[in-house]
Amino acid sequence: MKEDLLSKRDALMYSYKVGQLSKALWKVVEKDWQNWIKPFGLNINEHHILWIAHYLDGATISDISKYGVMHVSTAFNFSKKLEERGYLTFSKKDDDKRNTYVYITKEGEKLLTETLENYSPKNDSILKGSLPLKSLYGKFPEFPEILSIIREIYGREFTQLFEASFEQANHSLEQAEQALQSKHEKEHFLESF
Amino acid sequence: MKEDLLSKRDALMYSYKVGQLSKALWKVVEKDWQNWIKPFGLNINEHHILWIAHYLDGATISDISKYGVMHVSTAFNFSKKLEERGYLTFSKKDDDKRNTYVYITKEGEKLLTETLENYSPKNDSILKGSLPLKSLYGKFPEFPEILSIIREIYGREFTQLFEASFEQANHSLEQAEQALQSKHEKEHFLESF
Image 1 (cartoon, one colour):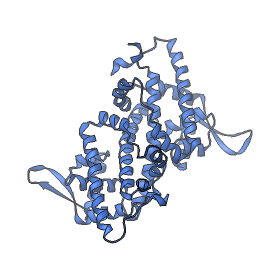
Image 2 (image 1 turned 90 degrees about the horizontal axis):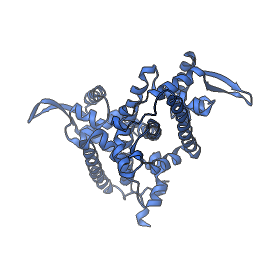
Image 3 (image 1 turned 180 degrees about the horizontal axis):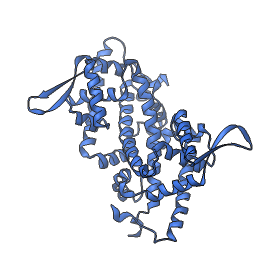
Image 4 (image 1 turned 90 degrees about the vertical axis):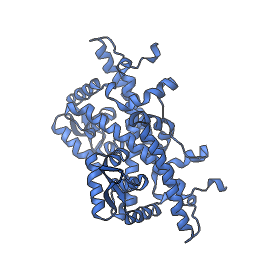
């Protein structure tokens, strides 16, 4: 089938486009993320590690590296730093004495919750950039093509954990929200834009 | 309208999802890009600068920083390094004596063409990860939502140049392909997968 043939030019053009889009997207995510968590003395990797340790409830360095999409050495070094600051502990599991697991401490949970409470939609460029789509579609876009590409590249297990982590995040945020509600009225943020 | 109200949780959940997706996507693009151009003694920023200088045909450091989504200091330092290696020149324009423009030299063009010729679809994870979508849709996905978000964030001028650069890339690759065709039969790459 002639139309199935893929020329090198088509391949490179497509790849160039995805490369440019993903760079532009990630760079703005990175900048907003950095600004968000800077007041807590955390960098992106540290915040990501806290988050993974929280939702996996005991993660190996290899898990952190895989699900955090960072080098093993990056995962290890920043986990150690978080341990020194009392936000993580390293220990063995009863049913797995070979691997070391990283657990989030109460202090770590507290810090993580504080960062979530401090999140401000006003300072989130991706969110603001997505509002026209939201008002057009009635909901945020879901990017099924991107998820499919990532599933092909990283494997089904990766995207499953990915999606489970969205659920978990939603649940954690709900709890944090309920805790806040006792303090003050639930806030709605559309007026901030 | 109650359904228009955007809770902080919805905002954070959406932002978290886009953050995770864009990180996973960019990290794989970055890795493949590095491996692709390593044989030419270039890093990603240098390759990107060569490309921008090529398609803008005279770019200021501010253009490079903007369209390459990199810090001004990164744009300047790597442009200087490329100048030292003879791939770029710095000069004024007749109609604009205030700004310095970066031009790609013949050596720079030659190097850029060599990198394009050396591109191998086999080593392109994004491409391979997109083939199921291509066979499902009959074409590669076009990511209109992502483009819309980037247009909102970076401005219309950015995405216009972005899209113009795809056209330009296509044209440059077509020329390179025609040059190659005189040497050997046009290659089709589907069999490589």
